[in-house]
Image: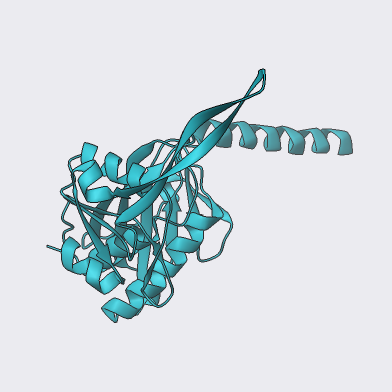
Amino acid sequence: MKKFYFLFILLGILVGYFIGVSLTPRTVIYKNLSTSPIIKYLPCEEPIIPENVSLASIKIPAVDQEGNGVVTSLEVQAFPGTGKTLVNIDRLLFWTDTQNSIRIAKMVAENVTGLNLSKYDLVYTIHANATVIEGPSAGAALTIATIAALENKKINSSVIMTGIINHDGTIGPVGNVLQKANASRDVGAKLFLVPLGQSKEVEYESKKYCQKIGSFQICHTEMIPKKVDIEKEVGIKVKEVENIQEALSYFLI
């Protein structure tokens, strides 16, 4: 009797398992920056976004693994909630630098807007292919988009910027400004905002130099410095900005 009772329980468990698997829908993956671990929401458990959601979209310049400038896009949704910060990481290599930039962006946005973000949920969706290199240089743009979403304001799509966001709202220096400016121009940007002192760069061109010594010729590669005015070189208006408040004056419509 005990044997049949055991088999009956085992059969019930197996039937329940296979029914559950067959009914399990597609999984959407988010990373909750408020609690760190990855959270998987099933469609019936996805964050319920109310009708009064505010959406802001901004273009972000970056550099791929080959050193080429690329432009990706970021969307921020803001709506009444409990202070969660969610990041849609579908098709994205999600790096620690980006996570930290979002945390700082949220803190600066709270200071600028005067809103209590423990009463709002923020959802970040970054559209990028897997070759985009990690780095904190999108921090200032992340902050702009966060503020725009919270204040329900539109972003001027003809403006693109690069820069690290500091905790006090100042904008820190980044690399590969020339490549990012070229990519911004190629997607139709009219104004490119950069950190202080970075509207001009020193580029180094490799050049082979050979010298004949007796019957031998010795060659080596030299790095020749060249000053580059990014605005003249790229053909796009370039403006240096010191802090996020100054950048906002160019972005918000």
